[in-house]
Length: 338
Image (cartoon, rainbow, N blue to C red; front, side, top):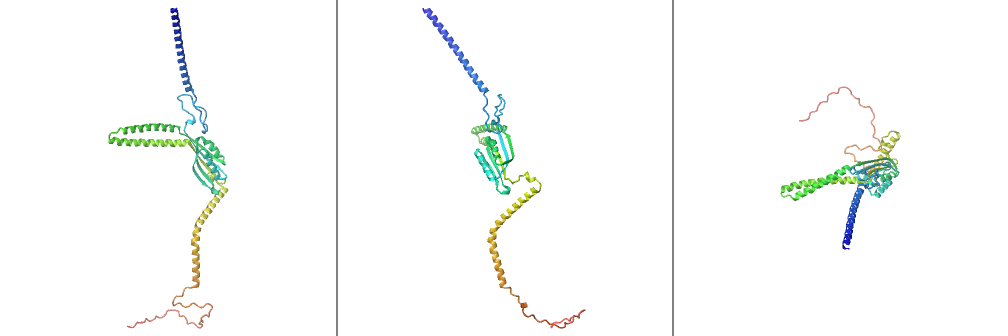
């Protein structure tokens, strides 16, 4: 019995060891398969979908090749610039609506120039809007009136942005190495030279970072130049036309401008005329009255003036002495007494 029991125990132990070994191998195989499956899933995972709202962006993912460039628009740096000309009935109201639309979209007004004169009512607005809302804002501004011109320009600065990032990283490493060398300087000459070199490297780094911030601002916020014109305001293209009506409109505008200028000058001079002109006129009237009451005195030795309406002096009538013609005898010279 002892021999048989020992054999049974040996067989059970062998079976148990074999089962444990088979379970370990299957577990290892399952782990490897799970790891390989996870790696395959990571390698074949599709890139995230493109952002919606960016003008001109396609929703298709990039190529699956590992070394292919990423052509998705949301991964590129693009500057959007727009120019619009819209003719409206009320320029001020349209300008307020444009500013309200841009502000509601998260943008702001970069410049605002307006002229409320009826003959030349216009407004020129420089609007900065988020790039994701660029197309929507342009369409909304076109509904303010009758759109006459629209021009959209794009500039891809992805390569410049990537180049700036690489140059900034390299320059930061140079600045760090310069600071380490400066910390280990032992002589004054080394200290002075290292300080100058470090200052130059830091200035270059600041310049590169400023360019990067400028590009980031241009790509994050697009610029829209909106020109609003009244119904009767002519554009630069219309002013080059020839004809009777064109000349009449131009002459009428010049006449209105001249009258406006004349009235402006008259309004500026009127207070001075009232303050200085009235006393001067009163002084001239008083001087004239005084001259009439006190005529100027006659000079000494002058004959008195003839009486007005009085008797006239008698006129002597009779033969007049004959007038001798010809050479006259010389008049003897008189000698003075000694």
